[in-house]
Amino acid sequence: VQLQACGGGLVQAGDSLRVTCEFSGGRFTSYAMAWFRQVPGKDRDFVAGISWTGGITYYADSVKGRFTISRDNAKNTVHLQMNSLKPEDTAVYYCAADYYNGNFPSRIREHGVDYWGKGTQVTVSS
Image (cartoon, rainbow, N blue to C red; front, side, top):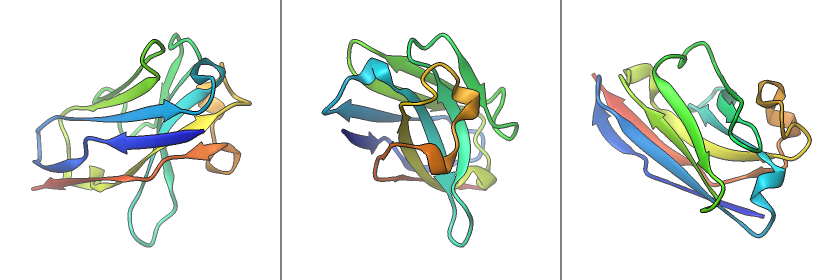
């Protein structure tokens, strides 16, 4: 399985940005998908997760109401729409695939992720 994230960039506070992850090399619908983020010197934090079918989503409190995760099972892609961005959202964003928690995105943890994509940098200026 390979995950390829794209769509990061530099934006101003209050702007919107969408990052996308393309999944290949496996059965996409077997995996819950998630986004994590990391700033230098800190742990990788869970941001949002989505179940196999897309019917269940789960968000970190820090992004709830501002970010939306979605998936397109026909195109093997998962998106993270980020609105009302804040400088504290600045981080490298990583796409992740979790087989075991396929229908329970709230249970996705960094140590349980099966596959990681390379990160994409999101920078929010004040």
